[in-house]
Image 1: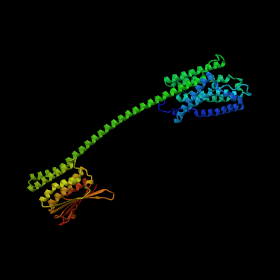
Image 2 (image 1 turned 90 degrees about the vertical axis):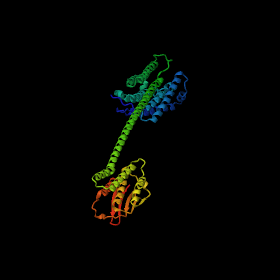
Image 3 (image 1 turned 180 degrees about the vertical axis):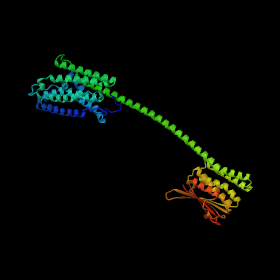
Length: 503
């Protein structure tokens, strides 16, 4: 049968449940009956009660009392451990076993009941409670404990036989009927033989334990068998009567072996948990390293993709801006269709576009207000040379806007296109550039860039769609940056270009 995992609780194994609760309930009932009978008999014979309370200062009684006291101390330890971990019922079984064994040792601690009582009821109940009753219950309790340790090796025949034997024996040895009085050695032979058989069976069951634990428990079981045989021969008179009985100390031997086994299993469980924690820590460290490597790869790929996008954007901007202007100017100059002034103007536009691109690509150029200031510094001398007054207005809050480098470039080129078209076609005396930032009802920012000239103007309503490369470029740039471009113009009233969007 497949062994259970080491971290599985013994009570959770998929095996038939042990009759622990019925055994403990039956033990409680039988103990109450015997205690009531014994106490009633003692109270009915005051002389016997007084004499039985006188301790005997013999070696046998002193050693038996010390052994019983040690058993009870160990039982308190097991019971406190069970209170802390009630799912581990083997500790409760051992605690009750120490109590039953201490009761069994009372036959070596208490003096005999006074002789000459009328019915000898107190003597009969004392013998039954301390000599006859505990043995079968000890067999059953120890069997239940071993069955918790080795659930796969539980002998079904013994498990079925033990309850009937224990309860039947408990009823048969009661002083309510003359069974023990007629055959005084019958219960002795019965529990001795059955006890030897149970201990031998338990010694076989522990073969499933570890080598060291198995040997320790088997040695303790052999000692119990030898002690039982020794005391049986002592009771039969086959040995000298001055020998000390060995049965009172078998409890210490068995419980010592059980404690040793539990300690070994506890240490093994701790070691297994430490190994599991170490393996888990190692796997966690390996996983963290793997995640770190994957994160670094993702960052590297993201950097490569970002660099690739930037290269593509730069090539596109140079191609559409400076490259387009230079190519067109070169073609017109070769065909003789461009005057000197037009060629100078085209080259100036190319230089302005290149400078705008460089400004946007600079890492420290993150503020839109600074970019607009640089643009004004470049365009100002050209407007002054053309006799055009420039009115430049930027509202507060422009530093709160966040644009990507590509959006900044589109905005500056839109503005450059608007000013160039005004100088080329409108012949204005005054140009007004106004950038306004507004806070909406939902705390979102909206912005508007307007370019207004007082030039000749034209009938904008007659245009069904933008004509010329200038207006088309402006519309496309507005769409590329997620903005909206509009134009308003009247003959003799100038032209107003408006770029607006939601930040």
